[in-house]
Image (cartoon, rainbow, N blue to C red):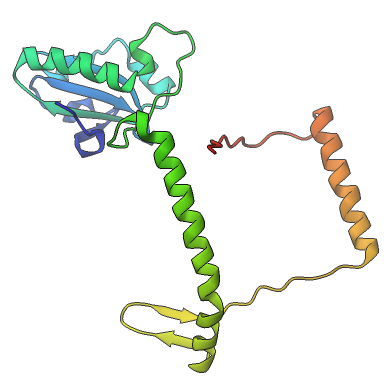
Length: 202
């Protein structure tokens, strides 16, 4: 059985008393529905989480939800546990000091992630090109209707973005500021407030 995490019933990690008093399989997920741990209870999901030995680990790694499926067949539960540990590779099911970041359940096999990503990027580029081609005609239509169009489906109006050309003195100050920023980044004076990691797929 292939389980889609987002379609499961769920409770907040700290609200195990709301779990059913029945056997089942459960998934510890963070806010993005990454699966950090897969487990089963052959008697009671509620009792299992009243004194779960990994609760602190779940909290440390951002556990937000206990997603679960109640099921009485113990053989099925053991089989599903193995299958879904293999599918999601949840870090807390491994004996690792520093767990790897788990995958988010997207509803399709990870072997398709890269091809799907490239496909979406190509569609996005095509749509953005078409969007730019549409803009001049939309501006004309809105201007011809007095600057605003409103229907039962949408409303449209004009917005203005102004671009400035600055004096050589200001441009020089801007270059000096850029150099100063680079210097502080190299010397460690500048503090990192966030880091964004993104894929590059060509």
